[in-house]
Amino acid sequence: MSSAPDPVLARPPGSCCVVGFKHTGEPAGVCEAFGGMNTYVALPPQAADKYEHILFYFADVFSPLHINNQLLADTFASKGYLVLAPDYFEGDPVYPYLNKNPDFDIMGWLQPKRIKADAMVPPWIAAAKARYGTPTAKYAAVGYCFGAPDVMRLVSGDEVTAGALVHPALLNESHFKNAKKPLFLSVNDDWVFPQAARHRAEVLLTEAKAVHHVQCFVGFPHGFAARGRLDNTIHRWAKEQSADGVASWFDQWLKNDASFEMFELDHLV
Image 1 (cartoon, rainbow, N blue to C red):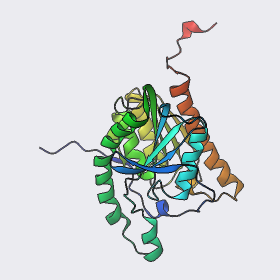
Image 2 (image 1 turned 90 degrees about the horizontal axis):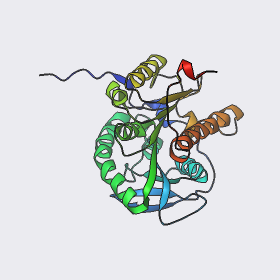
Image 3 (image 1 turned 30 degrees about the vertical axis):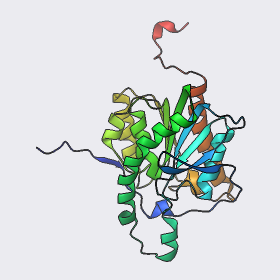
Image 4 (image 1 turned 90 degrees about the vertical axis):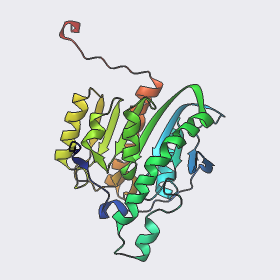
């Protein structure tokens, strides 16, 4: 018996996912090995042994050890989260190949990486919680491009309180059908996750009764939130707005104990 169709909504990464501008700065985090993966760890202003608010950061194909992703992780840490970014590429990110071979087969590199990451992330999550979480800790997850499926797996269960996707890739309809936790989408409008697919995702999230919010930067390129040109004021604005939107979403669900109830007409006065 054949399985039911599961249409693609966010396509696999392509050439637009491996271009952009390298950012400058000094990473504030450190790399630690646990749960089977080297992990970039960005500490909040109040460092501790255990934490109440922990953010799992699933990076794009440049890996969490690339300067752009490290600085983004540091940004979320500055807002009060312990940020943990696993290197599911195992020290083998995409960009060294691009510099050597302009005809590099991205999909040939990517497919085994995604399969391996699917197996590596669940035990890493368990190890991260045991190592850093308090008994009452709350967790969030953000995924950039390649990292989107990891977030969608987590928001389909009870391992996180909320999730966020930023210019996502590699998602099918089932990812959205199975969502149950609050989900923030910070997206643009391109061939990876085009308008029609985004609207379909919203329909599926609504049918699943998953609370969600969409922040859309129409006209901006894929990777705008991670690899934009920061000496361009509108590129910088979009990057900062995206990060602020993600952090604000998590603040509501993890720090402010947000609950969601539909308004009813008899509540109006």
